[in-house]
Length: 241
Image: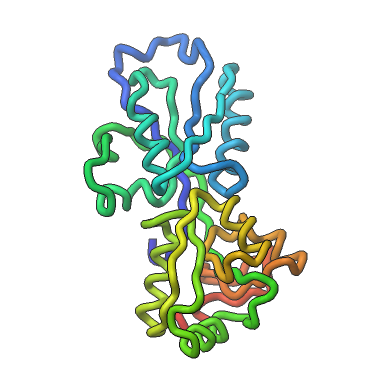
């Protein structure tokens, strides 16, 4: 992807072809979501699981297993029998984790079979309501005047939000302290409460709060402005294409 965004895709524990019978599915499926409830990954996964239940005639049970940038849930998914009854709603860290975590108990390429790209969502840089900035340029100016004083939330090490923040730091020469969360839900809770000043998250998880004025939308990583947030400029408009 040319622009940093959060991607959600479905992977299936690899099954031998003989194990998949013609009457599949004959029992409920388990959908492992490697983040806590409340974030974009969880919300989209539940919507997809509901539609799958309707179309397949079998319940798809959502199982949230958060932690370690999604690797805890991924490791659990890899342990289940490879019979096509366990699916994983993976997100961007699925590709990054092998490069930042040592001794993972699974192989992202050999232990999973990609099924479908579900959604691509631009990132939003949001600020708590009490932070004295209204756009990305002002964030950069504030951070330059206060090196290392301000922190930002992401959904974990290696996530697209983390990578976007590190890229911004390199391009602008600012210092921001990374605070990784287990998911977008907990990060937004702290952002709303003013416990953390900034967050680099999938736009969907902060859209309603930006529209209500509870959070400030500083910028989006999309190529064009979003119809849902027409007053929030893109990073290119803010001088960081």
